[in-house]
Amino acid sequence: MKKVSMMVAVLLLAFGLIACGKKEPSEVEITLASNPTTGYVWELTEDKDEVLKFEEMEEDYDTDEDAAGTAGSESYQFVAKTAGEATIVFEYLRPWEDGEKAYRVTYDFKVDKDLQVEFVNKKIEILDESVETEAELDKKLKDPVID
Image (tube, rainbow, N blue to C red):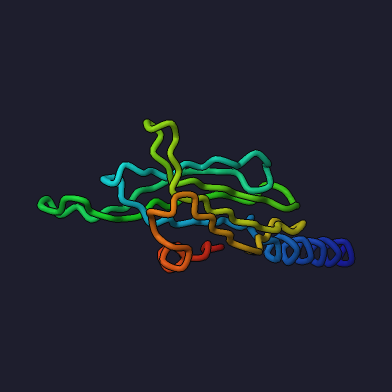
């Protein structure tokens, strides 16, 4: 009887250690500088694969009542759903002006079998030369935060 009790205790301990070692799927947050008073808004234009799944978007703008043209940011949250490669594309555009686009930002990720995310690359494309340069925009676009 003692042997059975000891075996059960060892198995429970082993399963407990395995469960504790399992990581939660990574979450990714991409924050984009934004100023809606310019007429431009960010649009998630490519999120077709289910490797990283879009969860929600939050806006954060200075809310000083007298501040016309207040800049801020939009944060997009994604969760790893399956292993593979993911590409997420955003465009900064004026949707009511035939989709006039200022720039496009592409983020590439790899997700391993444990659903842990690795940021691979960020690519900025200037689509309207009258807006910021790539270097100016790059300073405003932080690399993704991965939890």
